[in-house]
Length: 148
Image (cartoon, rainbow, N blue to C red):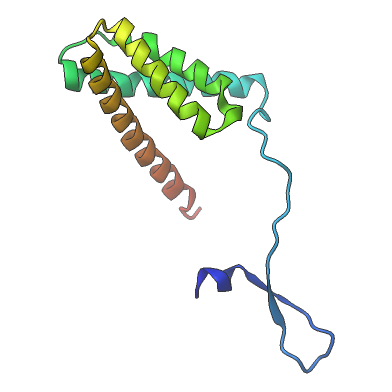
């Protein structure tokens, strides 16, 4: 069955002898509101995002720089989490370049690195964050389809 066939629904026709016709299903609904959960949702999102950003940054910094203090990653992570929550309404085309620039600047200042080394840490950081985020998303999606 193709994707088009799965998106079609039978519609009754005027005569009883004719077979039902297939028309595309239309999904209507309200706009998605990211702030629908209230202040508690913002706090929870901030905490989870800050931990995610900090841990992935620490992994990247350890990979590139060797032994580094965890405190530095937990200095940069909450800044990125706060900025991503503030900018969420503008979408990924605005948020991602801004956060990359902000992460680069924060890594440059907090880790006291040269410009080239800060670029390398930033690239590795976003690679690690993408891989971890992709894995967690797929795991959550897989567990969401489990029976029971």
